[in-house]
Length: 186
Image (cartoon, rainbow, N blue to C red; front, side, top):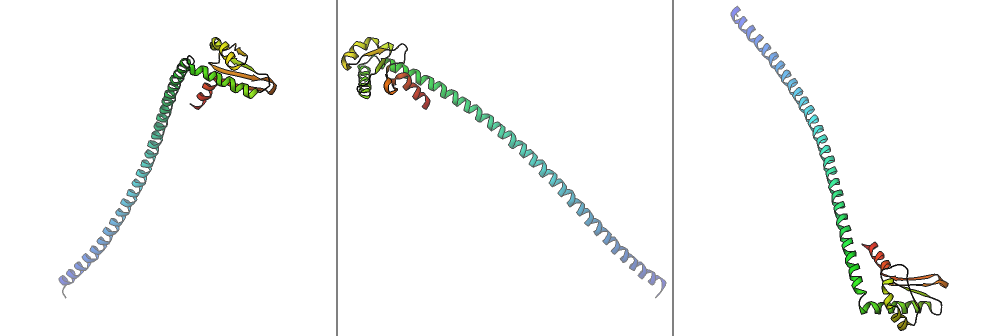
């Protein structure tokens, strides 16, 4: 083999070795770059997920706060509506009671309640009170029931009250008491 052929073989061999080393270095560099890109991607994904969780938590907190404020506003509005409704209802009931007290049915109601109180008292002493607005009915009611009635010093809205002192019994059939009982249910 001549020198030129030997040089050609040597050159070819050196080129192959250099090419292999170059390919190996390029492969190592590409692998290193891929690792760095993957690490960078994972870092940015973790950072992004953290930002998303933080933003989501903040939005949920704001939403809960808004919902809570709206619920409170609606509750207040509902309570106000209930209060106004209750007032109107009670005014209407009082108006109807006043109209009822001018009827024959009211006189019959008083007679029934007075008779019931007399029955509860039996032979014991009883004091039966009627409302000051019913003073004009006193004589008629006394004649029809045979009981002595007392006109109360304060207005209890109609109806009657009776006291059996010997047994510490109060029979309260006044409209004020009945209205207060009904109000507690509203």
